[in-house]
Each structure stands twice: as structure tokens, then as C-alpha cells.
Image (cartoon, rainbow, N blue to C red):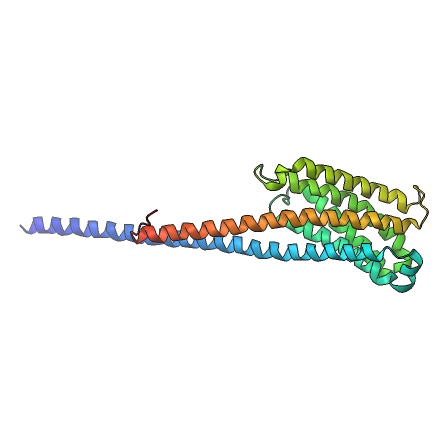
Length: 265
């Protein structure tokens, strides 16, 4: 009789041990799931905040370029006499901040990775516009021609970078849907940037100062680039909102399942 009781107690203790282990495993599993959901939620929330910041930067840059375009309607003599320094500082600062913001967005979305050849395009864009800005800040009158040559050359690559926003997208993306129309706009903008070099170098003669005429093409092209980036970031913001809602829905479904609650359709 005592042997049977001992065997029964041993079986019960083993079953209790197994139940405790399973309960502990389930608790850890649920904790891991909650941690995973929270991590995914926080990651999407952080990306949403960063995208909102960059879209604000690019929108400001768009209106800065529009202001420069309006100010450029004055004669070159008026520009140099009344607002030469702030006019060109805003020009070079805007080009650098645009290249920096564009590169950050491309890296943040995974379109450009640190181990791909496309990262060198981003480095050239940021580095070239930064060099042009620094040289101009050293001595505006002395380095202005060199800074413009560097800036205009880099803007050729900045325009080509817009292709990454189109053809590196998912085929269901709205930008990919209208890729041919967008590609035509980018090609026209690239031709404008190319002609700008010849106008600034007086290879293509104009009736006015070459720099002033080149500015018309420069600011128009930069506003087109701004529009591409703004459109892309807005789509990414919508995607992050969708991801956040899906993560919250998964958490809710799991919570309802654990409590045995079923929602009728």
C-alpha cells in the first residue's frame, strides 16, 4: 500500500513539475511576444517621427528655393548690391541640407544600404554640396565661382538619385505605378541641370549674366527634386501608419485570444 502511495505521489509531483514548466514557458513566451510587439511598434513610431521631421525640412527647402527664384528676377546688379550674401548662403545651405535629408531618407527606408554601391552616390552628393558650402563661407567673392561649379556638377547626380525613389519601390507603390511619367520629368530636369553648366560657363551665350540665367534652371530643378522627395516621404508616412495599426491589431487579437473573448463579425 505504501509503495502504491509513493508511486502515486511521484507521478503527481512529476505532473506538477511538467505543468509548472509549461506554465513558465508560456509566461516567457507571452513576455517575448509582448516585447516583440512593443519593439515593432516603437520602431514604426520612431520612423514616423523621423519621416515627419524630414518632410518638414524638404518642404521648407522647397519654399526657400521658390523665394530664391522670385528674388532672382531682379537684375544681377541689384542682387549683388542689396542681398548678395544671404542670397548665396541660402542657396548653398539649401543644397547641402537637401542632399543630407535625401540621403538619410534613402538609408532609413533601406533603399540604400551601407554595403551597396549606391552609398557612394549619397556620399558624393552630401560631400560635394558640403565642400561648395564651406568654400563659399571661407571667402564668398573668391570661392563663389568654384563653389557654383561644384554645386552644379553635384546636382546632376542629385537629379539622377530621384530614380532610386521610383524603381527601388514595391511594384504596388503609387510612385512605381506612374514611373514612366516620373522618369520623363527626371530626364527633363537632368537636361536642365546639364544646360545650366553651359550657361554658367558662358558656353551657351545669353543676353544677360550667365549666373543669373543659370539660377532659373537651378531653383526650378531643385523644386522638382523637392517634390519627388516630399511625395516619397508622404507615402512612407502612410505606410508607417498602416504598420502601427497592424501591430496594435495583432496585440489586441492576442490579448482577446488569451482571455477567451471572441468578437462577432
